[in-house]
Length: 128
Ligand SMILES: CC(C)(COP(=O)(O)OP(=O)(O)OC[C@H]1O[C@@H](n2cnc3c(N)ncnc32)[C@H](O)[C@@H]1OP(=O)(O)O)[C@@H](O)C(=O)NCCC(=O)NCCS
Image (tube, rainbow, N blue to C red; front, side, top):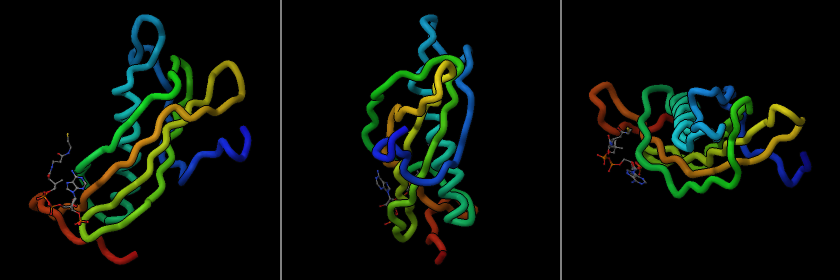
C-alpha cells in the first residue's frame, strides 16, 4: 500500500465478507457494503453527538472495485463538518484481499447524520 493509497480518517469498523452476503458468482452485494458504511457512520457520529443519531442523507456512491467472499472490509470515517444538529462524515470502505496482502479502496461517500433527542427530533450537537 503506497502513501497515496492511504485510507482517510479513523478505522471505525472491520468485518468479514461472508458467502451469505454474496451473489452466486462470489461478488458481495453493494447493499451489504453500504450497510457497513452506515453502521460505521452511526458509531462515529453517535460518539461525536454523545447520543442517538440517524442517517439523514448519503451523497453519491460509486463502487470502484468489487468485494469478494473472504475479504476483510475496513470502514474509515472522517468527521468533515459539524453543523447545528448534523454531522457530515467522509466514509471510505477498503477491502483487504484474502489471498494477498493488499488493501484497496472499494467505495467512498459522504454521510450526513443528525443528532436526535428522546422524541426523535433534531437536537444540537454538543461542543467537543
Ligand atoms: C433526518 C431528519 C431527523 C431531519 O429532520 P428535519 O425535521 O427535516 O430537520 P431539519 O430540517 O432541522 O434538519 C436537521 C439537520 O439535518 C440536515 N439535513 C436534513 N436533511 C438533509 C439532506 N437531505 N441533506 C443534507 N442535510 C440534511 C439539515 O441541514 C440540518 O442540519 P443543521 O442543523 O446542522 O443545519 C428527519 O428527516 C428524519 O427523521 N428522517 C428519517 C431518518 C431515517 O430514518 N434514516 C434511516 C433510514 S432507514
